[in-house]
Image 1 (cartoon, one colour):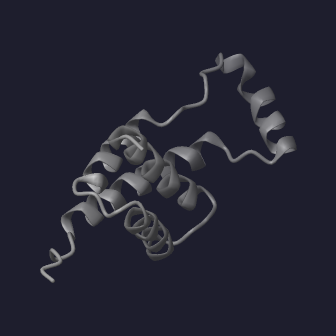
Image 2 (cartoon, rainbow, N blue to C red; image 1 turned 90 degrees about the vertical axis):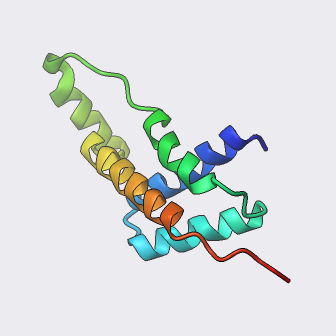
Length: 108
């Protein structure tokens, strides 16, 4: 897995965790477990925080089509775009905090 793929994966995992209603401690636990599973690479949280800005976004629609889009999203059970954006911001903030709270190096 390339460093970019890892960053994108952790960013997506954190954002999705918040979209699904996860609390910050739950999302952090899941992201940290995945990071550890992948070998605890240095700089991964910083890269993931930056990668949040590169996560796929929904295409823009004309203002005249917003109501129809909202109806369709609701019918299919898709979260409103505002929820996705709030989740992305929460993910970025969490990943930045995790980057600052680096674990002590293993000196065994």
